[in-house]
Image (cartoon, rainbow, N blue to C red):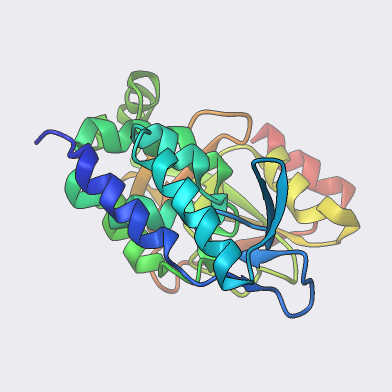
Length: 238
């Protein structure tokens, strides 16, 4: 299948029409696929995007820009929290190889993966399973995936904010990374340690976080480790 750039542009233009609503607690922030602020500049003029006429001017200008962009260029224009949703939306128009390239490029910019209001956990898993693993991962990561043992240990650093998401898909093979996530922002969280099966792995990702995406089965047991206990360091040597 060949990537249909025109269909992807049409999908982007449909999202451009979404309503621009400022955050009720932080009015200088808004949620929209192509902007995170209710104000912007156009031709050196400040526009208030909550006003219909000024929002229309902005949309007309953005439409011209989108129509000239390739797929990666459209993703660069997008408000990062919407990129995964958009990737799911345009999946029918993407070749497997192009999907994999976009996924690897823009996944690191997606925050709150497991709390995305536009995509459920199961929808994300179905999306990733729709692509052959050798397309989803680059050659180095796919080779590493092939060499994984049948069972191996992974970690996840959580805080009171996200510890309720017991079946989160984002884990790491590096306990130091999990420890950082469990204590960032000065919080005293928890490191989860779990034994998982290779067949549950969705993808291995490059980067300093040594991230592994896993379809965790319901009820999978985890060990809780206190990241502030000096004895947790022993586990690094296992």
